[in-house]
Image (cartoon, rainbow, N blue to C red; front, side, top):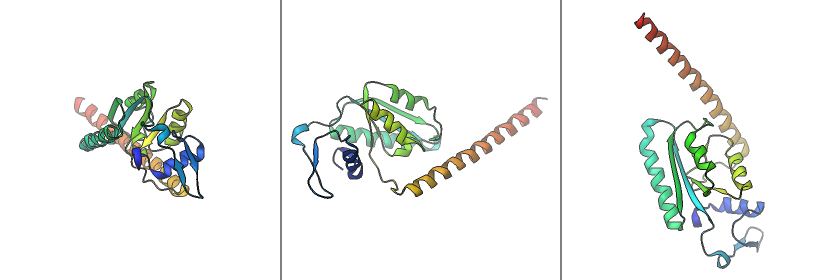
Length: 185
């Protein structure tokens, strides 16, 4: 996990031709990365750190995530230009701080602890959009399930749960509003 990049991620980047350092295949499953050609960190601009939790009772985890990402950036010698942290659902696509970080042109690399911190679904689309503009996403803990079917099932279940909890939340808000109106009347 040199420079915070998981070997699976580095291999995928090599296959896709997006590995930010010179490399060549020297065996069936072996890739030689030429570190001498690029001894500085692969991040050319600034790093943006993004941390998120789903609820206010997890605020302590925001600080832990921020500390872990900051330590990683310092050890790797990266210049942190922006840190965004927020309490919001991963299913919410209009998170203001995430949008602000992604829109910042000074941020050439977005760093998250796990992919689900950036979003519950379609993080690959964000990764592709970043790549298209010469930027990238670094996930420090890429311990996700590799099986596509399992990942798809998790996304579907997450979507159903968000819908269910959203309905329950709306029902509770409506009930509270009716109770408040009854008390005022």
